[in-house]
Image (cartoon, rainbow, N blue to C red):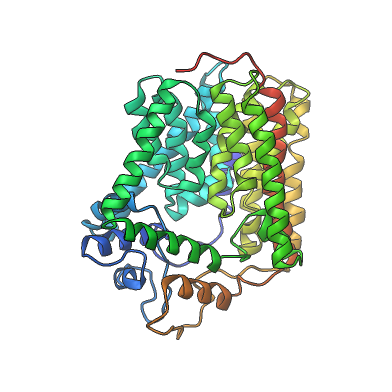
Length: 458
């Protein structure tokens, strides 16, 4: 708690300019555009975004919306409020999601739950960079990750309750897909079939038919191309590109690695040694390694396996599990983007390391190994200070404008490259490689720690 207090109140870096809950602005603007009959996946959302306090209206700094169409009525509901009121309500939702993810993961991890454990899991959550950065941005990924964990509880109540939670989880499809690891048993099949039917049917209705769905498919593809290889992408392919790999071979290498990992994961799913909850945890750990599109906040999905593995690891295995969790939890790329945040990141990592120790039944000397990660933060942070990563949209010229005919994806690509985020800096590649390695370590530790007799499936 002392480390957290120092991080948040003593050495906290200066906040970057911009609107509150920056990513929420695109959800809000898309909801308003859709409610007014405009295309929420076009530049029509800029008409709303440019009016939001903190946005520089004199330059084009479009933040595109690519969320699933069935969520548009939700965002339209928020858009009925003014932006300040909408961010307040969404902030409450995010706070509930934070608590649900932290305490839900602790509960599913098993073992004793007392005051020390409750404080410990809050310390780990507060020091988990993908989670806290997602909260600061107002990212729906945080809500989706919490809903994924709540789906496991809802499955004990019934298929309809689980379907509702799963529908919230797939508001961020690239993290909600981890629920595929929880398949097994009649109730889960019914729940996920309902989820798929509602998501597909709702999307079709929201976009006015199959032609709208085809348009959305093109939007997703175009946005993926726009972000191909840029610094904010934390994927195997993007890391390889940063190290100088040819674009074609980076894609081929990523595809081969992803295929191999998915085959190994499928073999684990077929093994009776893992129950449904354990299979879901394994899927969450592997997911960031195989999805083709991932920002830092998407790594929040790995919080659940990190807690589960830390709770169930043997004293010998626990240091590896804790180191893996901390490698995921450090905002490594932020060390290059905000060098002034080095001290805060150090103390947050110390707090998370001690929290993981309190969650485990291991001797104090075992905690010395995970405490090596805060030292690595200092080393990598010092090196990253010479490779400063620009911040969007602050790095854009104040007179930045694009042709009116350009699509939202085209504008986004121009913004990223003009900001300098399209540069292929090996140091930025190293910083993004570390959380990917953390996922691999947590997966390996979970493969040992979570072995058990499969529980009855619902």
